[in-house]
Length: 258
Image: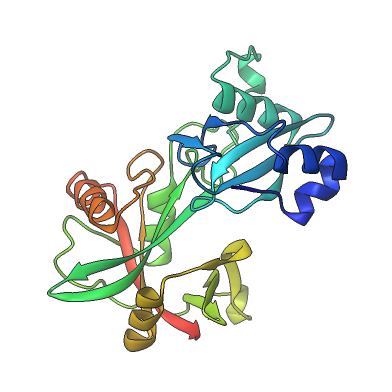
């Protein structure tokens, strides 16, 4: 049930990768490095995520539905922050050397019922607070304000489809989710705001709804407000709660591809 990508294999070597896949060094139970909830590599598909710093590396594990197997480049100080996050160990750092943890955007696909009709949705939740570019202190979480500045709309309830955000789009190719695109600088070509390391599978129902509406609803919430929900009804409950707490922004993004 363990996935070791070619990228991770190249870093850890064939011998270690084969030992992982054979179960010799597989984690068994673990806390997902993306959503922080428990996982079991013997019972569900699990991704290996390799954090590489300047001098050291840490192998972590995530639900395959949260993150694909990938290599994440971080600074040595950020890696120590990741170790603290993964293991719960206390890491002593000088106050002026504490840096924000490297945030990864967790993306979940699901169908959301609005006004009696099912809509394809992507729910985006980072694994750590997002600091505004240039914020060297790393304090606060500017994830939602940054998206509002891009045109996403704060929601207090999911009673209507949010307006279309032109210039942004969701890229599907050969029935798989590849990226969320945002406008390029100075009117240039769109660039990836989020890109899947490996194209993500979506359900037939989700793809059919996307093709029907020719758009995808994107919901975004700060770290800790949604979590990894195994069923769409639980995902909807989490979205409703986040909206009621003023922790949800959304937009309808045109569909690019099929």
